[in-house]
Length: 36
Image (cartoon, rainbow, N blue to C red; front, top):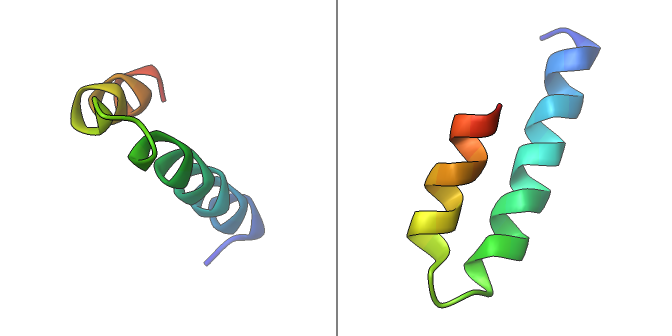
């Protein structure tokens, strides 16, 4: 796995942790993935 891909994975996981704290986690999560 390329280093850049590993970094992207870490960033995505960090976003997921942040968004799971919100009540609208699923909606916000969909928005995050749309932006990437």
